[in-house]
Length: 361
Image 1 (cartoon, rainbow, N blue to C red):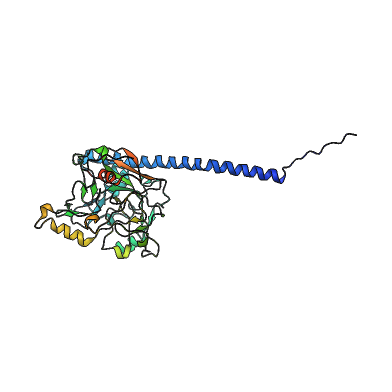
Image 2: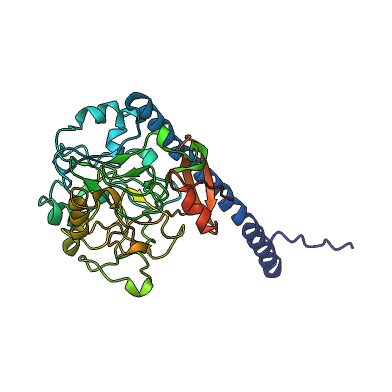
């Protein structure tokens, strides 16, 4: 009689463990590739966003013969009517939003629906920052209207002030003097024209990434480090998120109530991806002294000094959530990635309108 062999219909425990181990190894091998592919897609979108700024800036320049001021002031050196972002709205294909913006009113007096409007291209997809953001301190402390003035559409791209963190204006609400070897394309009351960029447009930064991801914590004044990180008025460590509408830097007038803040400005005084991030801060006493000095004796030789020459202002550095560096928009509307290990002398020179530089990425 022939015995029939039993047919085994299930895996043994050992075989099952082997299969699970193989699947785990395959996932471990594939996951970095998947993550890299996703990051490549996010970087592509991010660089496309910043190129859109370049097109808008050049269309604005064609119409106005200069780039927009980082902060538009008309009546006094402390009343900001619009940020460069607001000036560019018609050139971002945001005609309906642009029609709501009243350029004869300060930015904080615009219709309630303007500031919270989310413009998708203003946020880098590599960042996990919320959009819109909720800033109850700004709404309540600085603007006196926490209910209606606390929600803002985000921006994560900053206008380059150059190798200076000084804010500067003179009588007539005109730009004060900053040496061309320090001066960037933007500042309050200042937007360069193409003819003023003597380095050549392909050698000059116009903008750079300015992530507001919550992992970026903010300390006060240039040179600050982790020992200077202190909780803000909310009890949490400050983070740099900022609304696209806000061209007015945080200042000594509001610092006690707001704590360290970011802004729509970036400079090259400190390295790319410096952590913790230095805040953007306008020291009102220095600002007032500089403003008056342009009308007094020695006005012809006076200029607004950066922090490394004793100035008391500060402007945040450029930073991103991409590994190893940051995307920058150049004055010719091209964009490129610059390593966080870039030579600082060349990096700083490239941020100015007259640095005669060549930089290696």
